[in-house]
Length: 190
Image (tube, rainbow, N blue to C red; front, side):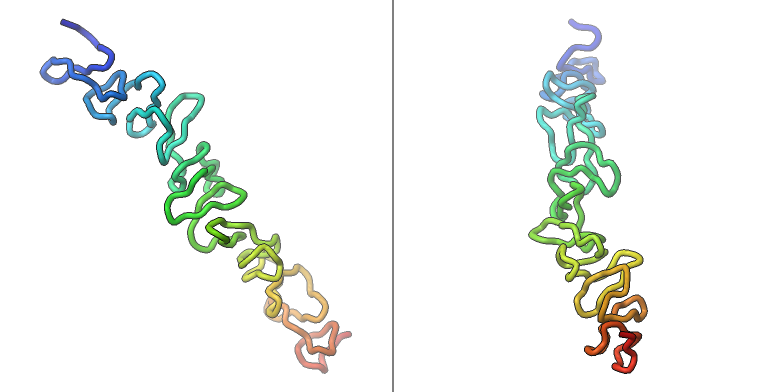
């Protein structure tokens, strides 16, 4: 006969000691989601109170507390807690999401400042808000205070030679003009 708490057992409603789940050292029933303490070299999840001897998907091991903490929802595996929505600290993305090359964050769809290349979001050229590659000739939209060239798909923060500004778009001058105020040959400035 025993009284009190015994490792690997819990006391049920009929005052009978029953075995905990094999991963639990202490528990309130025999399920692996009701552990109160884990076996040696096992780690408890912060939200489900389950114990595992390895890091599981959607969690990372907090080395300070030896607790498995939740990753950002976009991460299947992560290095640590997300710093914010831009720096998720993902190691592997959830299915149908793709990693950014420089922030360890996972997204889907078109995102500002990045383009999708071989299932990795790569940085656009610094002048592009939307792009199809990292070259300034493949912009789709410019960052604020920059002008889009309609023919070369480039972005500039000043009016370049052979172009004039029309509704924040750099349009091509007539072929005889270096600088112009419209497409017409008679509107050449230089």
